[in-house]
Length: 168
Image 1 (cartoon, rainbow, N blue to C red):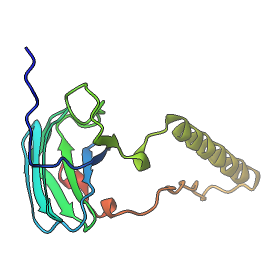
Image 2 (cartoon, rainbow, N blue to C red):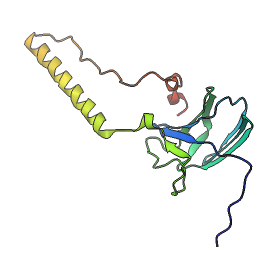
Image 3 (tube, rainbow, N blue to C red):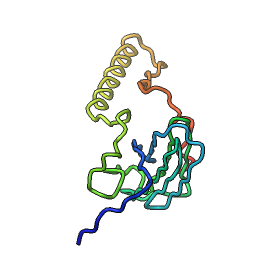
Image 4 (cartoon, rainbow, N blue to C red):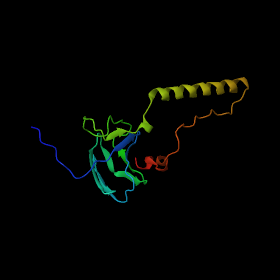
């Protein structure tokens, strides 16, 4: 049986999200939000606010479960960032919400797309550098030079200020 859709006076905000091994980060790009309501349960999230004369309301039934007590959220002026700690760590979520239907307002953050080929290339480059250093040490009878650890190509971000291992 199909029911007609309910009409609401609230808008649904756009959502960008990405995940790490320990967390799921949700970004809600709303400018000049002074006050908002956020409630996180183990399997869903409720968010509402009023800004620029518009009311926003959001309910997300999450793909995986989270530890609601370890949720961290920040208002950074141009967006609301919500850091959810995964219950099953190192288990990648296939999508943000449990529904398989495509939601046009939810998108994966393009700045955090995982590229397996690029990671393999960096690993091979590192192995080549270590091999060159080992060759140099062998030729010059040096035993005390440690190999150089490659630096991260990622820019520093606000996310590094939060130590998620203390929340895990």
